[in-house]
Amino acid sequence: MRSVYPLARRSMAAYTMHNMTVPEPYDYLEDPENPETKTFVNEQNAFFEEYFASEAELRKKIFESISNSQDYPRTSNPSYINGHYYYYHNSGLQNQSVLMRATSLTDTAPSIFLDPNTMSSDGTTALKATAWSEDESMLAYSLSDKGSDWQRIHVRRADTVEDTSDVIEWAKFTAIAWWHNLGFFYTRYPALQGDVDKGAETDAAQDAFICFHRIGRPQDEDVVILSVPEHPQWNMGASVSDCHSYVIVVLFDGCEPHNLVWVAELPSVEKGLGSEPLVFKKLVNEFAGRYTYLGNEGSTFYFVTTRDAPRKKIVSIDIHTGQETVIVEQQRSVLSQAALVKNTLLLAYLEDVKDVFYYCRLEDPTLNAIPLPIGTITSFFSDRKKDFVSFKITSFLLPGRSFFLDINDPQSSLRVFKDDTVEGLLVDDFVTEQTFYNSSDGVRIPMFIVYRKGSVSSESPLLLYGYGGFNIPLTPAFSSSRMVFLRDLGGVLAVPNIRGAVNTARNGTTPVVEPANRTALRTLLRERNFCTAKATVPRRQRLSWVAQTVDCWLRRLRIRPRSSFVVLFARWGCWTCTNFTSLLLGMRGSPTMVIQRKRKISEFCNNTVHCTTLNLALSTPPFWW
Image (cartoon, rainbow, N blue to C red):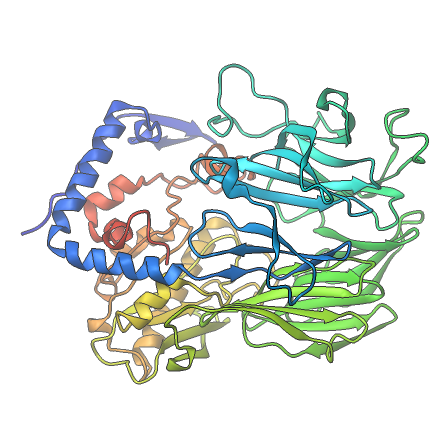
């Protein structure tokens, strides 16, 4: 018997944009307090429970298996601060990781330095930005509550492990940059007006400005060092140069992949900030690429940039003359991470959707490889003035491995700090293959296939994971819930980079929305055919296909060869491109979006029941593959 999905009322609402009338029949569902919205959600939940009532025992078993597989200890790579080692540790199912302090890398009894789990009753207070003062006696750190973008900055002393009286409100999208030990720069926005809870506002974030907070002073005495009221949409962030003589401000036009760089010389400590306005030199004053500060030697500043180099290059700029010199040319692969430590550049390149690590000296751009397992570098610690460097990698079958090295001899000094291990997971029982196929436009597409040795048969389900947005590559990453699919359900995981991935993009730029959607769809379907033809992958008619994406193209699959996909699941469903800039993360985006007719997920699911049920079929809260 065919299931009848709860119906949503179609209204006659519409709006006009660029002289085009766009129907908006489900706009009322955007209001979670609307009684109709609540009724519709309740009907969806009741429908789901009825639809899967016969699978309650299976859901329970899978939920327990996922919970157990997520309950394993995780340790970050360490940082070296004032004679101590700091790292984050999660015992397994803690809501937030705890910042630990150890006397050595082999210390078996580290102490707790900061535990966000104690800062709210429900464990939803998260640690965001952190930065140490120049003498490493104080840690400035920001917290956010319940997933809000708003941050609150505190300062903790290393000697007493207690907070000072300093509390900074209304910070958002901010880094923290200390100037000596006097205080720090941060980004803030105007305080909300009226009785509006932080994080509940629906207006776009506007009118960012940079402030300097002096330790021990109230926030209302903070000095505003830069604001650009003529460009209310711009966001900005500040950093301090290695020599503490300059403040570097980067300015972004929404989420566009380019920025400006303005530099100002800081006054003497005795004179202090606020006595007179800072004079900014507009070092990069056109949106022609992205510039990321690495370090400086006097007036010579080093940057990673995409200007005339979509796969990124390293350059130096003399801030007095503006002369730009290439230090490391753009390579064949995309530069995914870079750091300048003393006179050495550490560079991670994305080669065939996996990180490959190199180093070179400033005086010699020859790249020297640092051998690592196949994987993705997920976190990194370095300090321009220190020998100690650490980083962590992950892969499909590797929950996490932390390394450290001495910058004076990166290859020979490389050592393992910690391995994250999952009880009962026998990595040698599984296989990770990387293969390639050609997209419809001739781009060579990398793809990973993961499965248990000897378990693939014509009955094996296949999870096809595709991501079609923001030109983001799908690099190797561990997922305990996907391991349940591979281990307990005998599944096969296929991860194609359906855009061709940034490391194989022809020009490194993101295409406009509509052509990108078509390319993503064609590439996904070609990947399906490729997997079907592989001897190691089951026949098409017996597969369970799951597609996940952020783009609107998933809805197109329901009118394409639907017999190829048993299940379609939109992990991040962005069905409304026209007002994306006013909702969710789109608040920071550019309003120049391609107009598309809105398709609410409720309308989509009135036609295709199976596209939404998978998320709730296996567990609650949502089951993230």
